[in-house]
Amino acid sequence: MKKVILLIALATGVYVPSQSVFADPFLLQDDFESYSINTWPSPDWTAVWNATDISTNKITYDPTNSANQVLKLYGEQWWSADARRYCLFPDDVYISAKIYNGSEPRTPGWGRGSIGLLGVRTLLNFYSDGTYTSWPGTSGTYQTEQWYDINIHYLRNGTDLTMTILLDGIEVFDKSFEMNSQEAEATSHYLVLNGGSTVYFDDVTVTPVPTSVFLGSLGLGVAGWKLRRRKEL
Image (cartoon, rainbow, N blue to C red; front, top):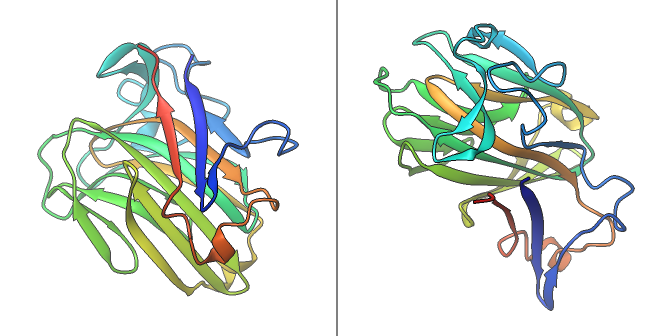
C-alpha cells in the first residue's frame, strides 16, 4: 500500500491535514493499486485516442519497483493517449501526481507526458527535447526514465488564477493571470493524464484546501509546501 502525506509548511511550523480537517480529504485519489494488472482502470478513468488500445495502455508494474502498480499510457507519434477522470473543483485545490517519461524517439516539439484540465489548460507538459513547460512563460529541463513529483496549487479568485507548481519539491512556476470565463465559472473538470510516448503515472490526487489553513496571507504562497508520496519498498 502506498502512503500519501500532504505537508504544508507554514511560517510557524508544519501542518498535516487529516481526516478530521475535511469531510473527505480527497476529491480524487488514485494509486492504481485496486485494479487488476493488464486492464484499463475503468470505470474511474476514460480512455481516449490511443489509450483505447489496452495492449499498451493499462495498469502495470512500476518500472523501478515491481511491488507497486501504476498506470501506463502509450502515445504514438501524432496520436497520443488520454486518461480522463471527472472531478469536482472548488476554487482552491492541490493537484498532485507522479510521472515517469519514457525515452522513445519523437519529433522535436512533440510532447511526452502531461497533466491538465480538459478544454481549459495544460498544467504541465514534458517534451521530447528534454524540456518541460507551463503556460504562461516557464520552462526547464528534465530527465527521461525517472520519477518526478508534480505538485500544483491552483487558486481561483474571481477571474484571476494563481498557480504554483513544484517539481520534486522545487518551485518552477508561480504566476497569477486572468482566466477565460469557462475556467473561472467551472465547478468541475475532467483531469487529463496524457502520454505522447511511454509515460507512467501514479499517486494522482486532487485535494481541497481547508478554509482553516491560511498560507501566510497568500503572500507566502506555497513555496514551503510539499506533497510527497513514498513508495513502499
